[in-house]
Image (cartoon, rainbow, N blue to C red):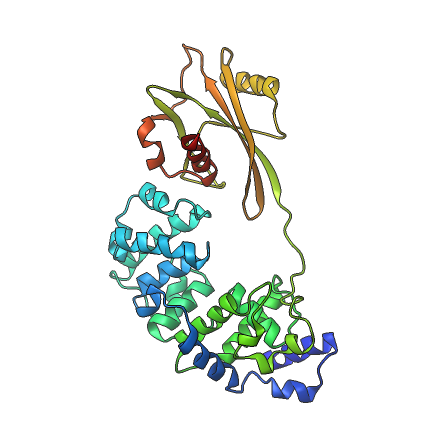
Length: 376
């Protein structure tokens, strides 16, 4: 069905608008982009990636801002651009160095994808970002959202960006109740966003919708009186601002119990690199025993002996410390440990110099533990 029919269906589900009202809201009319662009040119935040059409710098900003707010993301973007000013520099960077620079943002697979995609640009595209939407989608970690952002801003491709901010703006302005976390919702909103695109200024249009969602049409306490689309907003007219956008359900979080062995001596601090398809892949942490529940001292002694043999000395316990990820909650407990004298260390364990531990790419949970230690 067409975007217009889909919108009509959403209106009728809510029973608040007539067909005459719908015609006023027709997405084919130019009012949406015209009002939005006029507002954007006067009110947008001055951010460094908005003063360039360099696809490398725009790509970096979009990937980083998928992870964090602008105020925090700006510092990360500046560090990446300073350390790796070109896509060639990033492609040549060691993985550990890229992960270290990314530390604190989470979703470390995105940092690895950055480096892999940079290598693709060098190896498959002669060192230049592809100018075609489908080719951009071929880069590791680049989905529809990022490809549309790069393509529209750098190359004037008329491709709609649809992120959380865009979902919120469109669902409220057009009164759409289709769940944004459903396949039908994603298709409907992308089709509508495509219909609304300004074909002459696609980059500014996409940035304007996202900027409106980030600064005015916010999830809580939106600044409706400052919105350039105020007069057309169906959610405002019908008192449904707080209801929209609608999600059908939330994914339940899984709780995991991490027991870290803090093995520290004058020779250094023991670390191991996380491998396998799990969180924090490629990052360094203390040796770990994962349990199905929170462990007391006696249970921890038994767990260590079962895993590494007898003779361990278990000292101070710190935690559990709660660390929340998107679909997991980590309960991290740190145990000060001394192995027996004849203990044979696993090959994957390394001894990092005490002064150099924070130079390794560490999960935020481990980094916070070390920071708290320094402040004692």
